[in-house]
Image (cartoon, rainbow, N blue to C red; front, side, top):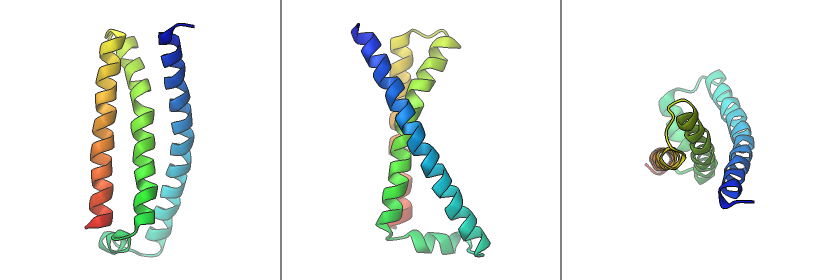
Length: 115
């Protein structure tokens, strides 16, 4: 098996594992949102409860990491198939976008939890 095939299989595997994590994270996120809204909490009250909650931060950090792992393989495939980009260029651009998701997402989690 070639190195490219192994790398592609690894990306496929990581995307599927991250999809499973995302499914759980989305369900938990929706449940928490429904609970908060039905409880009549305002946005500022919700932020007041999340500040200093490192368990909240850990959960949403996991959510962000799963997104950052999940997006690049699919985005690279779209760039190759639809835009006809060379595979190496598509993968580089997709990985940079995944890094952008990771940095901005973790920064947002930090801002909500730590400030």
